[in-house]
Image 1 (cartoon, one colour):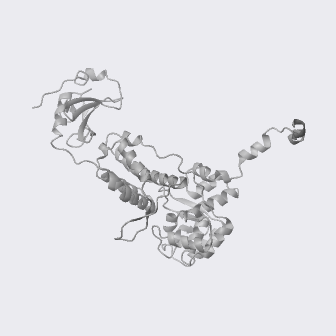
Image 2: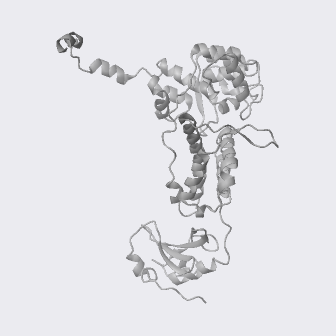
Image 3: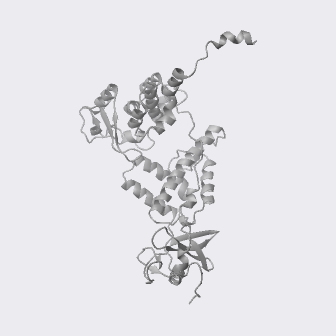
Length: 421
């Protein structure tokens, strides 16, 4: 039997009571590569922690648990029973035994799979889940998928994130063909765009790791909490169309694509939200469009103008409520090619993406004096912060009006210029 390790700070409840409460455990080496730790809690008995060296400078940290998976607590207020309440000596014995029967490591791939199941069960947008899955398959799994999340370090995650910025953007490639890449531009806007894309991928991974931590699959989230997203990457100028450009674009669309473009211009809805609409989502009596599943998972009702109501009345006339709003099936990225062709035929420069139609609705509405809260409600934002960030400069500013009304006046300064010369 291995020799029992003594520790004056941990082996008695009296000694442990004198320790300062903190989240970081008090560790004691009990054999090479194996530490036993005690976490002092603000209330209730403390818990026993095991830290094991797994090689390459990395450790796994986990709570000591019973055979049924319950947390093992210290004998701070109750006598040790060797089942759920352990003394320091019993905790050592259980920690050593865990070296022979080790549970399978919980990997990044496991965390991503659990996270996607959570998103689907929570009713999140099918298109947003698809985008997250693509980022996982392309950027996360090849580099990090097999790693135990307990072995992730801040440095490893930063190096992975930084590598995304130096990777050339992927081009659409046919099945079975070698992946094609766009040339890696080195101007400021291209670097900003790559950092913004890296941030979106990092957001997906971080959300999955946080979900695993909240579910008790790991004992610390400090490694990824220290990794911050790239700053100042969303400062690009939003492209929106003038009314004249929007009319030219609609005229240039093919017959199947035109209703989708018109709907986007009339609602400011996202492509994925429009694709999921059914005929019943349009309420002709009150002139609203029900978005039942948005990017955030929350629904909303978009209020239509008379022109917008007339458009959806035309689209839905004589059709059953459970039919898709748009007759053609529009899937992931199916809008890219017809949008590009329509923009080219309409001679719109600089070019605009389909998402730019959402910016067009918001920008033109703000410039026409629509209150920012109303714009935010129709777009599906919880408050006005996003609208203020992207479109606030277009609004007739009450700040500018207040300055022009209340700032001091000093008379005709120009008349004194001659005297100063």
